[in-house]
Figure (cartoon, rainbow, N blue to C red):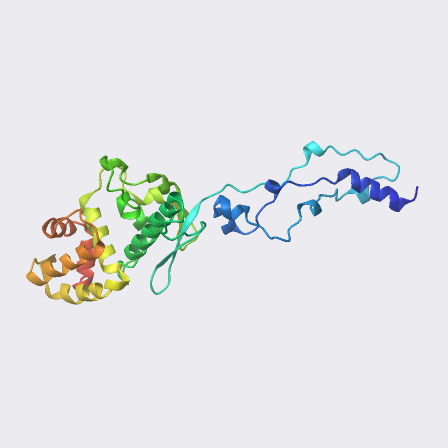
Length: 284
């Protein structure tokens, strides 16, 4: 038997077909895709053509028998799956895009679950985007500024027909992740309060969402121009103009936790807000 034929027989002994779950997606972001996206593959892909060959068979002694223990072969595995559904991108304005799941608009032909997915992540994307754009240019924004800043109903669709307040949102969606501009994946649950919200922090979150909305972006400009002439001893004076502007910001946020009086009270207690006032007032 010639050498070429022996080599073909030896290779035939070590080949084995890989099942689909053994294949590894190469790009880092693909590890964040949903199950449906991971299952998608090229129509021209042929699993029958995939095989593994012993890379050292040419180095075996000519007369030595070939012994191969297939059970010891380590096949590639999927990396740990992180369900990243939102990407927070940083440019002139922050932008949140939905990622890693198939979008479905709210139509009657689509299943309730898929509509619920779309509604929840769409709301979360808009809220987080507005919040991020509610920071001023002189502030050093980082991902820690997003931790424990939101109530779940600020990010998720609310089921008004539920009498139990704790179950008005499907918190299951908070087990998914958002990827920040620095490439770090963080669970959406890290963005929500643990337990009862801190009113001062919540008021600041509402303020940022209100002035960060693209459709109401003028509110940030108005606030920037009005504050320097509305400060007394470093504190914001509750003038008619300030009260009216803060009421517009509260309405822009869409949140109904506070009325305009309690909103002013809790907001002016917030340390981040005080720093903004000092900066806008020309103090360092």
